Amino acid sequence: MKKQATLAMAGVLAVLAAGNDAQAKSLEDILKEKGVITEAEYKEASKAKPFDYKLGKGFVFTSPDQKFQLLLGGQIQAQYELDNYEVANKQDVSQFNLRRVKTLLSGYAFTKDLTYKATYNWSNVVKENSKAMEEVNMKYRVADELQVMLGQEKIQYSRQWITSNTAQQFVDGSFVRNAFMQGYDIGINLHGDLWTGLVKYDAGIFGGAGQNTKNKTGDNAYNFRLTFNPLGDMKYGEGDLENTQKPLVSLGSSYYLNTVKKTVTGTGATATSAVDNNSSNFVTDSNGWLGTAVKGKYFGTKVAEDISVDSWEADFAAKWRGASMQGEYFWGKAVGETSGKELIAKGGYLQAGYFVIPQRLELALRYAWMDPNSQIGSDSISEVQGAVNYFLYGNNLKIQGDVGNRHIYKGQVDDLVARAQVQLLF
Image 1 (cartoon, rainbow, N blue to C red):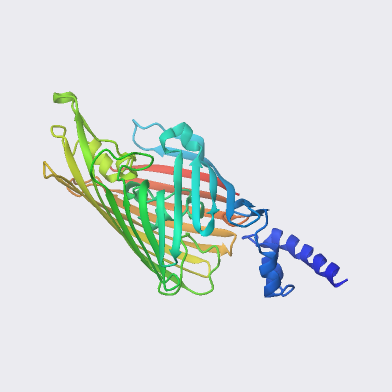
Image 2 (tube, rainbow, N blue to C red):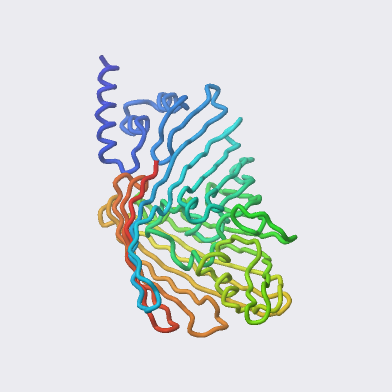
């Protein structure tokens, strides 16, 4: 009778959890919180099952000896975008877009200390097939203080880039972040959590040519990041969806060093230059701080030369009881090693949000600014955006919308961008 009563209570609790818990806790978690089962019973019930499902992580397959595990999940972001340009030679756009459609694989092999991850973005198959394969790597945990990554991952530079796109307050990251971030690259990275997440570090060496691209030169890229969480470990995630009951603060800084090769094709008036064999985001993005300068012939078209790149950023984030704030400052320097010509770019953003209905409805505001080349006057860009987010099951199922005005100082023009997005993470 007691067992039947326990099962009946478990069923009622499961129904209530499905309807009200934005994080969709497991049945074992709920029973433990309510005091229905003991700590020992919780550990026994939580043991890996041959087949399971975890919301937000996917379907879980575990070998009988528990030495191997595979998580199979997916992500879909269906988006609508309206672009209204003030400049006459720009075409206004009203479009529906599958922003991201991903298959997510992860798990461990032989030991829980050896993990792996593979993500494939199907939306890039249409747009840019060479960038469909994203994070593909293995990580070995020697200890919390030292973990080693081999393979391709996000360069640990910029808080907003490191934060998953599924856990951001706006439909997409700031245009300033997009201009300065390196993207994905292949290499080795050392990561550690010190004093239970109080301090975190990353130190990596990468090919330097970017996502899914083999380096053709003898130069490599180096990246370093240090994060300090004085009030306790703070995970990467924008907004305070968890409705944190104690204040959390995080301070971080990253540094990136690389050398890229500028090539020259053609002669005379038809001569053009580009960065050879490099798919790093700050080079290839239409508004990337270095790529824009090279395409605009800032470094000239007469000499093929190496360009040394130094890039630095500083960031902070804070959250408490549904309120959140974060910001970043970026600085980049490029020097032509033959011409001696120098480029300095800088920019930043500040954003804040508040859950007017805890864990359900959030409002956010962001201001961003960038000077892509301080050596040239009147080419700065600024943007003001507002956003509203409604969470049905946390970040696993949410509806987002934002609208922004981007001001281009050169020409004194304004562009209006409005976006709406539905996100499903399973």
